Every structure is written in structure tokens, then in C-alpha cells.
Image 1 (cartoon, rainbow, N blue to C red):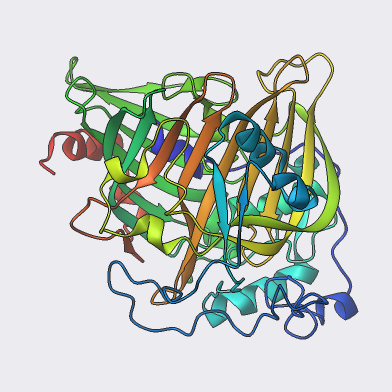
Image 2: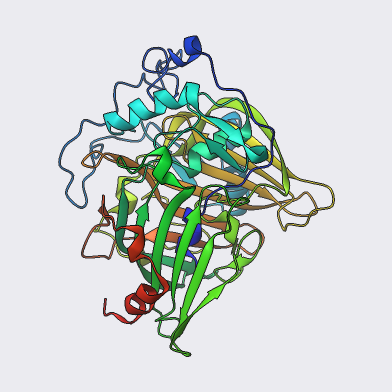
Length: 443
């Protein structure tokens, strides 16, 4: 039950924030982009103005609209301190830990783009959406980013969780757990997801607090093959519990199980459940502080890392992924800090999140242990599919700096077919009975 956790709704415990004024909302599409980013570039031009993102058009498998770009410079273990103000703490830790680690920095392209109806819904949300239930839910929206002009960390993270992923998707993905020597164990899965929120036909009346329905099954390695899960994921997880069912091939039957989250371990203990998708919540064990916006070097437009030219063995290296395939750019990001509340337990005492202003994706996360020592770091290599259009954070790398191991999730390089977007099924498809059929069908 790993892939699906990436799509669990977020529950945050903060007071509700008032809706923005009509005058403030009028900035969307003028001085702000349709989803709330600063439209202008920065003073020296190293971050360009947003001009609509990638033009919509065909993008065959392996496409790279920025293949002709050359690195502007390379950050290395020898010079990283010169760029310290633009680096997450996790990158500094990687430079200190691995002398061969590097970041090739390319010209920045603000490639994020979405459908016009999604922009329209987002603008409407600015004056019509507000938090409810102490931030565990929100009301007034069935599509669009709920808080394009966020006033606190709760609203910020709701944008990440409720981002546009089309009506649904299906396909194959692999997670690779790396050893110290660069060897790895690959776990391949097949998934089917259908979104309720952000489906154009959903209304406030038909939303019924539902976010997404999920089916996922493990195909390999052999000792895990055949296990499958079904999820009914609500938006407000305090008002309504996530429905989780599991098919166990050894028992040959479906059973309902409780929710799994927080710091329950995943992938040989290298991650926690709430670390999937960079963060999936809930946030009730943390006090949230919105730091503000900052120019930083982040993974972006990493098309080469998704290319079918490379096998997984070309990506996995001892200590870290093959940095020749990664791409970093200077972008403005929102910075938010989450500190563990007194009296609550979690393996992570503090976490710092960096969210892209053009997509609301969490692109990086610094993680500290119970002794206040830096421990882990996560990065998401975002790309834009102009043919959909949609922005995804597919390939995510989760580093454990203490064990010098890591796991990469959502690899698709060796798949013969690309993930299919705008796939959907009615809610009636996602039943425990269908789970058993889904689990035992050949794929």
C-alpha cells in the first residue's frame, strides 16, 4: 500500500482564514498568474516572466522541449557554499556527504500550464473558498486550486494536495530501493485512479467530500506480487475516514483495514507513509509556520530523467541518483516550516517544505530527527506535459543521509506505455468486489 498513499487528502489543524477580497482576486491573470504566482520575472532576469507556460501540443514519449539547453553552471562539493542562500539544507547535506554530488543548473523555464476551465475555477475560488473544521477541510470548491492567494501554511498545502491531475490516470510505475553499493530492488505496480475533485463534471452537490478513488496492485518482485489495495479518499479526513481494502493473495480474499499514515515506515524504513508525494498529511501533529517566498535552486523540467533512453540501472548510483540526468533551475518557491507539537509523537521533529509558485507542487523537503539533527531529504523532479496539459512531480527521490541510502519512486523509463491521463471510471467501479477482480486479472 505505497503508491496510493501519495494521493491521500491532507488534514491540517489551523484556524479558518477569511476569503480574499474582490480587489485582491482581480490580480489573478494580471500581476499574478491564473493560479497565483508572480507573473513578472525577477530583477536580473534569471527567473523569466510567466508567459502561459509550454504551448499545448503533441509530446511523444521521450520528448524534451528544452533539450538544446546547456548548463549555466554546476554546483559542486567544492563551491556549494557560494550558493548557500539558494539551496535547501538537504542539498548542502548531500554535498557534505558525497564528494561527487553535483547540481547542473540550467536556464529557468516557467513551463507550467493548465486548462483554461481550471484557471477559471481557480479565480472563482479566491473569493468563494474557506477553511472549515479547523483547517481539516474547505468548502466552496469542486475544481481548481482552492487557495490561489494563500494566507497561511494550511492553505498552501491544500493547494499541493488538491492540484490538478486530470480526471484520472492509469499505468505502471516502479519504486527502486537503493543499497549503499548502488544495487537496488525494484517494485513495479499497476494503478487506476479516478478523481472526483477537479473533474469538470463534478458540482458542489455531487462532490460529497470525495477526492479520489484508487486501485493499485504490486506486480513484482515475486514475493510481493498479487497484493492489491482499494481506497476511497475523502477531502476532509476528520469528517470522514478513508476507506481502505486490501486483497491478500495468500488468503485469496479482500478485507477492510484501518488507515495507515504518519510515521509508519515504507521501503525498507527509508521513508514514512506521510512522506509519499512529498507530503500527504495529516498535519495535526505539527505546528505550521509560513516563512514566505524565496528564490531557490530546485529540480525542474527534468525530462531527461524520464527518458526511455535510460534503464533504471542508469539512474541508480551509490549514495544518490545519476546527477547527469537531473536538471535544476532557479525558481521562486514558498517556504513553510512544520514543527512537532508538544505531547505528540512522530519520527520527524521538524520539516521544511519548498513549494513551486507556478504549480503548488512540493519540490523539496528538509527533515530533522528527534534530536534536532538533519536526517532526511526529499526532492521531486517536476515536468510539464503540454499535450494534457498538466504538471507532475512523478520521479521523487527520498534520501536518508544517516544510512546513505535512498529510494526513488514513480519511475517509468522502462515501461512500454506512458501513463494515461484523463482516464476515469464512475465511483461504482471502485468496490471491494472489483478489487478482487482487479487483483487477479493479468497485467
